[in-house]
Length: 414
Image (cartoon, rainbow, N blue to C red; front, side, top):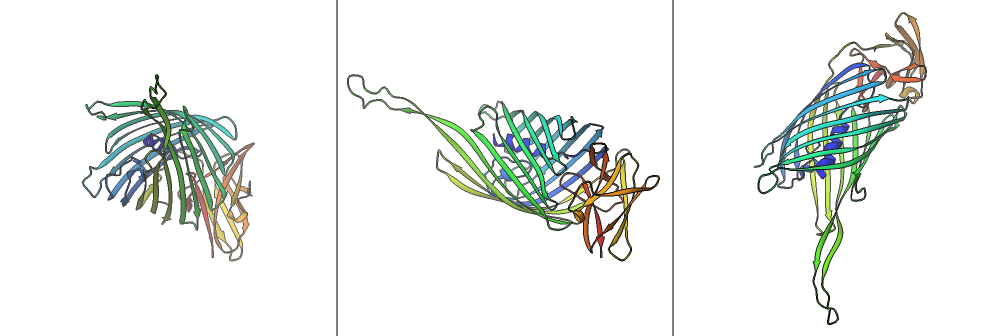
C-alpha cells in the first residue's frame, strides 16, 4: 500500500489552500536531473523500485485553475510527468488530475470534497482513483488543520502471472497541519493510516522550511512509516505424552516493515517566475520478519518555471511606495472593493490588523510607515465585518510567492 499513501498525499498537497477572489490560475514547468537508489523517493511517482542505482531526468508540467465566489471555492489540477532513466529501464510516464470544492461554514471552518485520479506506467501499469471528504479548521490566518478520510481504488494491469489485472480498495485517513510559528518559519505535517486497522499501517511526515531572505529558503524533512502484516506457519506434531501426542497446528505472528526517511532541500527564487531547486533524501528500510535492513539515497536538482496567467476580473491591489530620504515610507494603492484596508508585515511582526490605509480619493488609499533601511515583506488585509481576507496584489506590484499559494509584497529601503 506504499504507492497509495504517496499518491494521495502528493495529489492532496498540490492544490493551493487559500481563498482567492474570482478566477486564478498557475502553470508550473518542472525539470530535474538526479540520482536514485530507490524510486520510492521520487516526489511524483513514489514507486518502490530498487532494481538499480541510476541517474535520471524528469520533466513535469502542471496546471491549476481555481475559482471562488462568496463562501464557495474550487480548484482543478492536472499534470503530466516524464522520466527516462540512464540505465536499461524503460521510461516512466504518468498523468494525474484532482478536483476539490469547499464551502466556508464560518470564519474558521470549511467543509468540502476532494477527488483525483492518476495513471502511471512504471515497472507496472497502475490506475488509481480516490475520493474523500475534508474538514478544514483555520484557528488563525497563520495556522490551518485539515481532516480527511476516504477510499482509493487501485488497478494493477497484467499483475498476475496469467496476465490478468488485480484491483483493490484501500480506506485511509489523513490529518494535516500547516502553520507559521514565525514569518520566516513554516511547518507542515501529515499523519495518515489505515481506517480498518490504524495501528497496522501508519505514517507521519513533516517538513520545516526557513526563509533566509526574500529569494532563498531551505528545508528539512523527516518521516516514518509502518506497514504491518501477519505470518502464519505450521507447527509440527509429536513430542506429547502417549497415547495422544501433539497433533500440531498453526502459529500466527505479527510482523512489520519500517521506513525512516529524512532529507535536506534548498530553493533559490531568482524572480517570481524562475526558481532553482535542490533536494537530497535518505531512506532506511528494516523488517522485523527477515531482519533485513538497508539504506537508499536520492539526490536531485532542477529548475522550475511558474506562470500566473490573468483570468477574469479580480479585485486586486496595485501598490506603489516611495521614500522621502528618511525613515518615512508612503504606501499608496488602488483598490476597487468594499471594506476597510490595512497593511501588515514583518515591519510590525505581522500584528493584525496592521496599519490602517486611509481613503484619499475614490479608489486610492494611502498609509505612512516608519521603517529602518532594509527589505520588508507585507500583505494587504481586507476587513468586512467579522470577515478577514488577504487582498491579491496586481502583476505590476513586486511580490514574492508564499507557501500558502498567495503572494507577499516587497518594500526596499536603502
